[in-house]
Length: 258
Image (cartoon, rainbow, N blue to C red; front, side, top):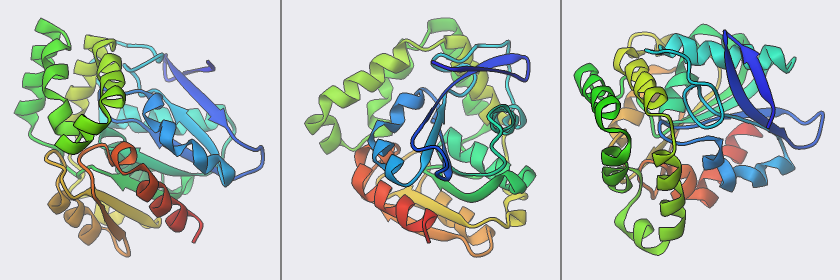
């Protein structure tokens, strides 16, 4: 898998699709890798898809933490520079959506259109993230993985798609505890509530109707703060790009090709 040596670390990525097609960057959530976007492969009909593992995750390196949202955002900018991509559409879920908001504020010239899904301008509380980072460093990712299905998916999806859920949990358990914890610390200090009103690129905000982590109310806040933002709800929990993949893809295609 290609590796970009950027920002004194290594970011693993894949770039797939027809050369010359517009580029769509897909940014993973906390505790997943670029493999979480398997259901979005169909978008290669219209886009060249750039997926990457956020630092500390998957095949990317695990530099010493804590990380910051500035670092996660600058990794995207540097990856685009590395690949000589002047501008791309961007879609991120959860932590990836926070990264997307940072890009919209701090690097709007690099983003043609922005999709932020199952995310918030301020996710959780600082203390909760610091507590989770400390737990993972002390006990590994086992306790987190045990509680994760109910946060990521609805009960019906867990029952009917147990193989897919199990594979995602195996990925979570196999991640670096330090990388996961360092990203928790990035989320602990990430607060874009007073910044996102400055975003001027076209934005689509996607919410899961059953998401207990980043709720429809969080999506409402983002959509109300960003001038002209569009808003869509999907019948899913936190990882709506997986649970409601067809509707997610339709929403992306309609927004990005408008």
